[in-house]
Image 1 (tube, rainbow, N blue to C red):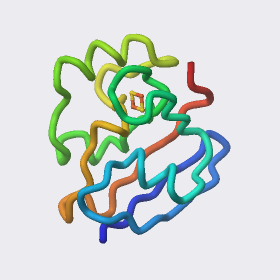
Image 2 (image 1 turned 180 degrees about the vertical axis):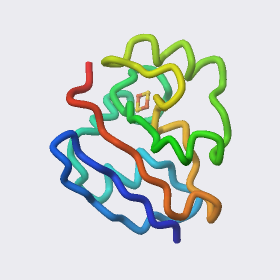
Image 3 (image 1 turned 45 degrees about the vertical axis):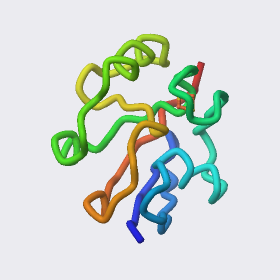
Image 4 (image 1 turned 90 degrees about the horizontal axis):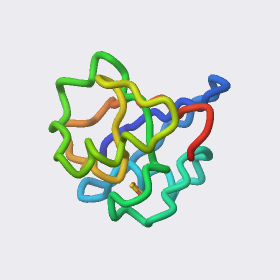
Length: 107
Ligand code: FES
């Protein structure tokens, strides 16, 4: 299991144990973490699973594919460095301790 901390815009933290093989989006969805809508169900086609990855983690998770990069243009206030789509981040033992910040809203 990998421990992932989801921080809501208001500062509320949700610390969740997520099974390897799932995505960071699925970890939020299956544990009732609010603020990650995931309208397209993980197909990298909506941008409503957008988060800001903790700065310490940006280089510790696999980078963005071009499709994710394109879709992030549609996210609410994307950050060129820290923004990611959580459906595109696979959970592995390497992401144990990951911290992500949920934006004020999803669009
Ligand atoms: Fe739609 Fe991630 S769930 S892009």
